[in-house]
Length: 208
Picture (cartoon, rainbow, N blue to C red):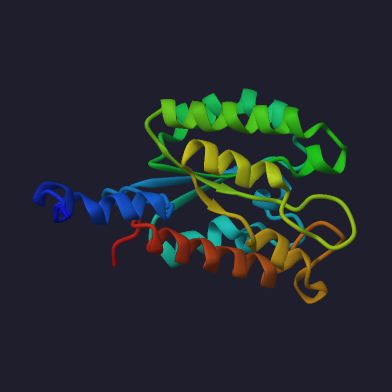
């Protein structure tokens, strides 16, 4: 009987990396340089409807992170309009990172999932083309019991994006954290900011 050969030493060195890839390692972010700007781009959930603007999640995240966070939220905006507005915002602010939380109005108006996904994809590609990093923030779908719309997780997996999939759904599922049927209260926005701050630290953007 022939003795089984031991794996080559070089292969042994690669095994941890291969196992990591096989386990689906979470995407990471590059550390922010000094003075880095964060652009929060979205609709009314970003603008902070339901609370004073200074209590919207971008303002609270600026306090938590120590970085300038631009609130580029436009209430009522559909993703098709956001896609057209995005290049100007990127050119004006030149962010290191974009927090992309868009599509809620598409869902409320029952725009097709394929259209929403295509518009979000185009926005991600535009952001990456500008040299900025992206964090995608999912919003809930319609139906009994809120759950994140599947377009966000699908896009994040396809493009290797850092995704905050639950926080908007979690906040809007708690009546105590809502100002109306579709917007958080100041307390809800505070939780969104805290979760995003934790995600940025966990994935390497904020080094403290």
